[in-house]
Image 1: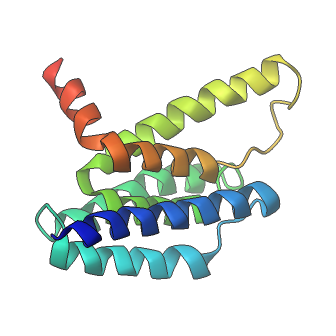
Image 2: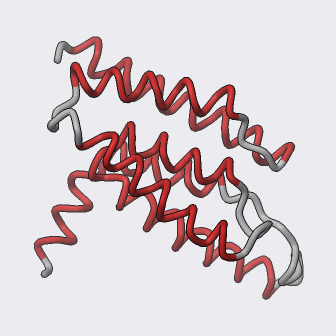
Length: 156
C-alpha cells in the first residue's frame, strides 16, 4: 500500500468515528446512513489493500456485530442497534484488532459509568451513549492495536 493510502484510510475511519461520537452524544443515535456505507467502503478497501487476508475483515465485523447483538437482544433498550452496527464497521476497519477496541470500550465505559453513578451525576438506570466508547476504543486500536494485542499475547 502506498503512503497516501496509509494515511487516507485511517483518517477516513477516524472521521467516521468522530461523526458517530458527536451524533451519539447529541442525539443518542448512531445513524445507519453513516455507519453502513462506511462499513461497505472499509470492507471494499481492505479486500483490495488490507494488510491481512481479505476474509479477516468481514469475519471480524460479524464477530463484533454478534458480540454486541447478544446483549442487545437479551436486554432490549440497554444497547441500541446502532452500537451493534458500529461494531460491524469497527471489525471491517480493524480486522483482528477489533478485539482490542471492544475490550477498551467495555473497560472505559464501565469505569466512566461507575464514576458517574458514584458521583451521582447519573443514576443506575440512566442511559449513557456507548458509541463514543466504541469510537475511542477503535481509535486506539487503529493507531496501536497491533502493539497492544502483541503485548497482551506475549503475557500468555
